[in-house]
Length: 105
Image 1 (cartoon, helix red, strand yellow):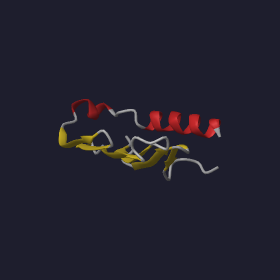
Image 2 (spheres, one colour; image 1 turned 45 degrees about the vertical axis):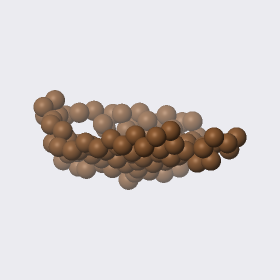
Image 3 (cartoon, one colour; image 1 turned 90 degrees about the vertical axis):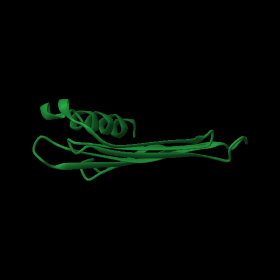
């Protein structure tokens, strides 16, 4: 399992490497809502085709069963013009990325 997580992180890092044009990317939209102690959400889109949305909520806030649940998606365009999308959830069960480019177990 550790191998899959490490491999996924390395793969995403390699694929997320910006192309030369992205050095001049402009921010097209940006949203950041710090809703308080129990949740947040943010998102952005840039002119090079990169998009990211993430939200989090603390379930059972203030109790012994308190749990942070983060959900998000990020997409970018490779130098070959392919759009890569990564969806993820991070919670008590760990970080779970999903995407067509990630090898299955």
